[in-house]
Image (cartoon, rainbow over all chains, first blue to last red; front, side):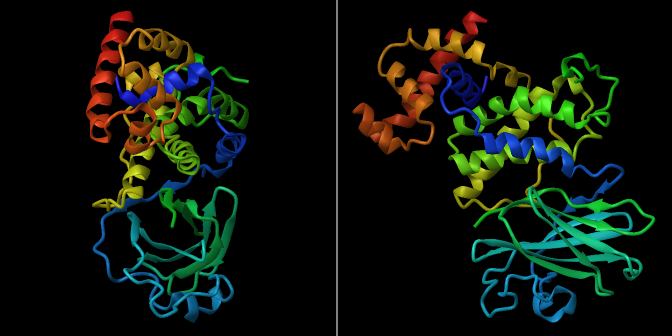
Length: 172
Length: 179
């Protein structure tokens, strides 16, 4: 019997520290974040350096105004953001989250055997905010101004099931 | 509203609708919160651990094969997320992708229940000092450091960890005798 289970039962018995309403509200709202018919890409281990963030935030016109204003600043990624890679048999999603000025920025790249067609787009989802970006031929995308915490990336392709990453957690 | 307790193992969870989901939240979020807090997480991290467990369920709806153990699955997943958040808070860098594999529900999670907690309190009150005071304090102040605990209970800071482990072992024995 695990100690924390016993301690949790003891805490429940005396009724201290009930679950906050905001936590319950977020739990109820989580149901809307499911992706019926979607595919969850499998996480794979990567060796760091190369990443999706190489200049993406400032050089990709489709991302203008979306990065929170700090993309590409010298030294911003000191130590480097962590690269997360998720794959399906025909698609790879690379994701690099970083926290800047207390907000979450997510850069990434969708790779497949064919270049993204018009209509491909990604959603970067958090519990409360979802931001959408059309995918350029490079497959690169960047989104800023998100709340820190949990997020996932979903790639939509016309006529194909949506492909999502696992939920990732980022805090400063 | 569908009764989750009536589900059988043959059913997948893909039928879940918003009402059934909210029923799950009402039944289990208090237990999940209690586990995250008992782990010593502060309110913000505990909220993230609980939210993480629900999001893991969202991405696992097709993969949970034993719906009758959803409660144990949620509590176990909350504990797993609490462990990962605690490690990161301590600056430990995970190897690999740091994402959980499929969760195996821990049968012991069933003890996270207020009624059972009242039985445990009865056993706790029979412990000698300093166990009784130390465990009471641990229950009421899960975030307290060893130094804070030592000051409050007039114990040596270096003795808190070993003493608490010994006291929890005694309590587990008493509870084991009772169930």
